[in-house]
View 1 (tube, helix red, strand yellow):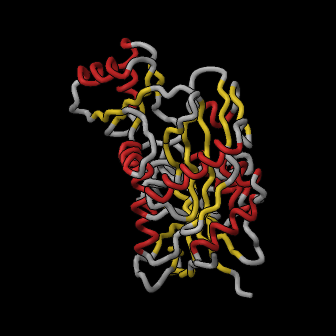
View 2 (cartoon, one colour; view 1 turned 60 degrees about the horizontal axis):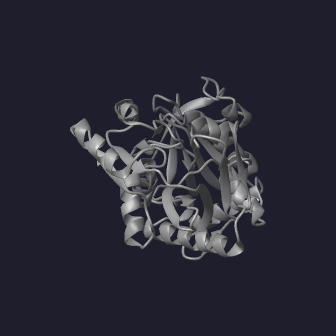
View 3 (cartoon, rainbow, N blue to C red; view 1 turned 90 degrees about the vertical axis):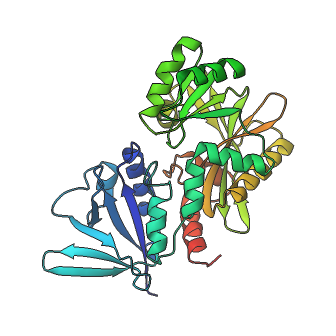
Amino acid sequence: MNKLNIAVFFGGCSSEYSISLESAYSVIHSMNREKYNPVMIGITQKGSWYYYEGDERKIKSDAWFNEYECTSALLSPDKGAQKLLVLRKDGIEYIKIDAALPVLHGRNGEDGTIQGLIELSGIPLIGCGTLSSALCMDKDRAHRLAGEAGVKIPTAAVLTPETPLSFASQFAAEIGYPLYVKPVKAGSSYGVTRVEAPEQLSDAVALAFQYDNQVIIENNIEGFEVGCAVLGNETLLVGEVDEIELSAGFFDFTEKYTLKTSAIHVPARISKEKSDEIKETAKIVYRALGCTGFARVDLFLKPDGTIVFNEINTIPGFTEHSRYPGMMKAAGYSFDEVIERIINLALKYE
């Protein structure tokens, strides 16, 4: 049987570069090598593309970029070619690509930009498409579409650099403190601040603007965060619901990747009836935003049982210890099987 060449993109010039390296290593390491040949394409933090031919373990340790194992490369925009162009010193090498998986977090990774390039090249895309990726990355538009689908959403307002701080102050006073200030388009809680008092608002807005040209202010949702790992195109498979237990503050970057003072419970410590309701809500959001392949839907569960949409992550963390694989594992699907399924979805085998 001929192996299929699966392009795996890693790195990238977003603030989530290091997280991408860990996720990509896990994905590459878990691929069935009897069926797939991973074509490793590294993107530096400056945005340069390289075909990487070294040991996959060097990706995880960020030792992959070197002159001996990296060659400049790019995707052919010719829809009929479906090839990676490797720019060797003695000419161009063409590598046929059967499907492409961007394991890139944040800006230029899950915001529709690289998805558009892959779709333009005619290569089957593993995961959410261009429009869906762009919408899901945009917290404001994602909320609006989920709301139109009947899902409860936070009370929020969007600021631009031209918006006077007086508007932000007035809106904050209306929804009350504490509240959250976030970049509209950023991941891993970069630039997010829990604001406890009016005197903290200005600094929080300034921080968020360091990560995006739009900032969103949201009311605080009482309760706790739950997540759903969703997989599929038309027919959807949902992993077990997980629950984030916080000792204080919010699930910021440090907590997401160290769990110093927090814990993740899979399955969530809730009734089966409420878990089923959360899963159905996640499916509604997934479909409303046009998701395909896989995504993680994050929601809040309030003390009165109300479910509120938080955000959706189209390329969630993909190490064996990340939330998405953890929820799938709790539902009986191994990490290797999840990788197999998302590849098959792109190739229309499922």
